[in-house]
Length: 397
Image (cartoon, rainbow, N blue to C red):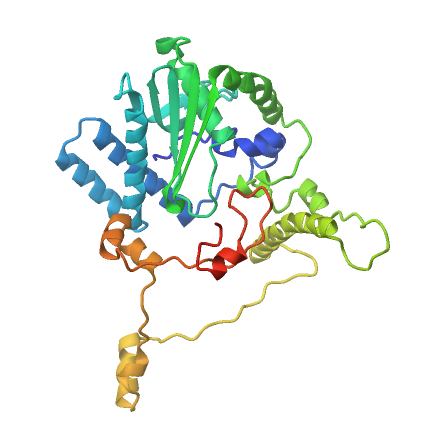
């Protein structure tokens, strides 16, 4: 996805944060934006997905497609797995198009520039905008689909503020052409790295009511820097620029109410659950604060009582070929100079791509159950079943 010239402050991608903590936009606006190789890899994958979608649904010569794809694949961040991931994205768009029985082709647009409904203006006075990966319209339905390259945490489309803002912007964009014929809104998040395709549906009336009653007042407060700071899960998951140094979050993380009662001497299950809930955001915040403090010290700023020291180093060969030649000349057997170990299925899939891996490894891959992990009850995964594991069945059956 091409990088826009103007980065919206009230962007759909950070909506969950500024809707819940309206001052966060102004508080973090002077913090420099930082990118990462994961973000850059995501942009590259988006570009590949866009190219493949245009090849699928619009006229594009094979020569042009291959030339543009090669340029993208020459990027140092390119991984073979991206081909399989983006293929799944195009397959999802195709399934959406074919689901419209009366008009299977549908009106379809790729990388759609949409205006935001937050009232934000660019420097030239025009409305700030965003980009929806794909919009499809047919049979009174507006369908907005978003590709996510991440492999960390599954992202749900259900009541997702980012997707709802895209849909509101798309409604405004298409209203001059479709009027009130669009009555149903569908949104889909395609996250192939986690085999996650999430759908959600709502009515146009409900979506517009949300925009009017929730988005508009929150956006006005956010733009004015008003409202109370409200720390929550959206702080880290939506990359709050002041996550580490936010006073409200520090207060929330460090405030510990005493457990009522003096007996018994050990915590009850309810108290354990309470302590776990309190401790998780504390650990997350503390790690971010520690990383921030180290960065400040390395810049030459003082954090009273702390300093940076050199961590444990490692020993490496100055010149691998020369070192190994000398080692063998001095009696070291070549066989012990090299480690030989089998490649794992995930590593091979990453190298070959999903389709080629499945073809090559068919019948030779088994999935072993993972170790039990404690998560909140709201986690969508089914509960761990020890009895099933004992009899060789998947742990979550």
